[in-house]
Image (cartoon, rainbow, N blue to C red):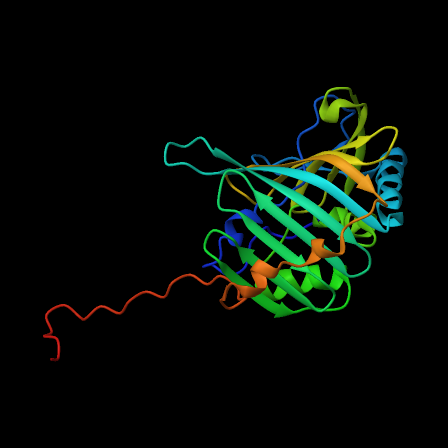
Length: 284
């Protein structure tokens, strides 16, 4: 839940599109936990609260997702970025996600930016930019969880819905969890009735909307507490299909395999160009 959303291979258009670490927002109606005394002028601190009902909702969602052998869904990610005028700009991407446990994953991303495709087949991972015809290929571990971890640690590639496609979503969300409380129900999000839950750790505050009947996530919205701009990140989920049939060809791409290869490396800032000292003539 605490990972920073970055993407690999700066030259690859995939980098801009795997963007925006999902999770959640401020509650509108809730019983506020008791406050802990703080120094004057400091941000208020709140005593840890883990409400049993909120934990149960997270666990029910996790069990539903973990039990599925195949998963398909659409994720629409909206994330904010600073503007020169002050107020943040919002960017949006759409990802079609296909997963088959334990070792196959495909994420096809489009809309509001360059398209990107990510494929994992239990042995290799490929990040493909179709417009540029560039592909980065790397060896991968034998499970989805390990591959996602390797993609993040080694290549700075992260999906904002990662916490929902790992083998045990609750375990990922519960790591370092300090607050979890129920907010109420919504009949607006996702075209169905959802239970709203707020969660927080030392770095992030998040709100989740979970289907009251099917226990599937419909939205998550988050802000990082150490971000001075307090930019919001949101993912909306739709078109859920659990345990449906997925074509074997969904987890690879012949076109990507033939594309021009580039390193599957972490994006690094450009090195400054050395400038000659003032007052000294350049050597010819």
